[in-house]
Image (tube, rainbow, N blue to C red; front, side, top):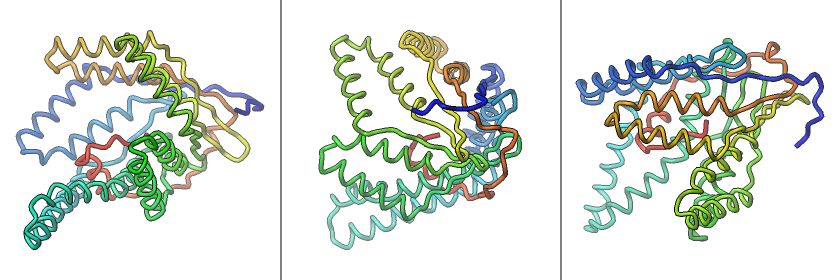
Length: 320
């Protein structure tokens, strides 16, 4: 890693959300979602994201999420339509050939086909509706290119019986994050499949040999790898990120969160979520020589939340 930076600056990331405040939002969201038989979900998600973003700061200036329930509801309806159409197509094919066993197989094939579309759409929507000091984020990946790469990676993963999985994970993270923009600043990610494979292999066997104790250090290693390979670039200027988390601190946050959920019968979720966010940002350091006061607006608004809602239906965690 190059460290020859001039006028080195430090950047401070913080999360200042409170469990009590988030609890109120979560409870109202749950109640209204239940009462409306799920129709309120897009508004619930928008309120949740708006709170989490507005509680996160960079150099004491807060991020903002501009997505709305109305935008997400339109995407929600489109996503439902996609799954209804999927069901109809599967029914017609299985009925036409009188092969009912094809139904589940076709369902999973079509789901896999939707994955790159959902991931691409989610990234494009989520980044476009995010900002800091009024400077929007953006995603410049190409859907056709990403879809082709995704299926190539899936093919290699299948024919290697899953061994290629770590390479696929890093290739996807490199592509997605490498196409994210923050005004005129570019994200870069330098994860390597071989390193990631060895990291997980080591974590798996040491967790097995220590009867699960090493699990927390494995999580620390993964977090460190994700953070340390991320950087921002603007011309010759860069910002580097690094993790300060330890295995012991991971043990503390995970064990405490589990106890909170158990003893509150799940009602402590809001405190678990805010404690986790505080932990993440408290353990990320950033330094470099990019002047954040000189950022230029370059990214367009994009309000189609279909990909975002498809990713929810498919239970995908986006790489943000």
